[in-house]
Image (cartoon, rainbow, N blue to C red; front, side, top):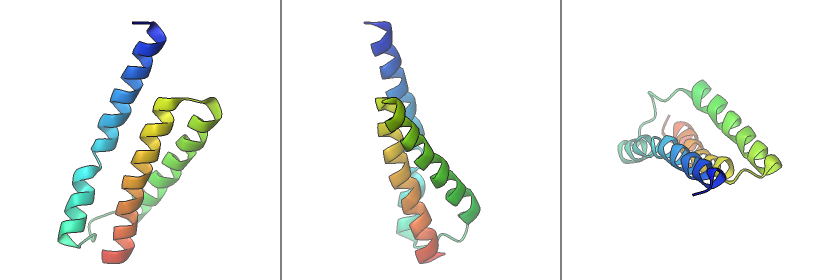
Length: 87
């Protein structure tokens, strides 16, 4: 396997694991209909940072950064929406 392909696989694996980490929180918040313990400041800042990673990934053409951050943004933004809805 070429070194570039190996790093792409490592990037996709790392991004996938850190993205999947948000799934339990999304499910818990959705099921409980409660987001009182979710930090609005943290998730607002996090979503902004992830959005900037998406712009960076687009700019440099880095597929692992782009794909994993788009999915992370969707999950984190969902939690942020739940914060306003169920807050």
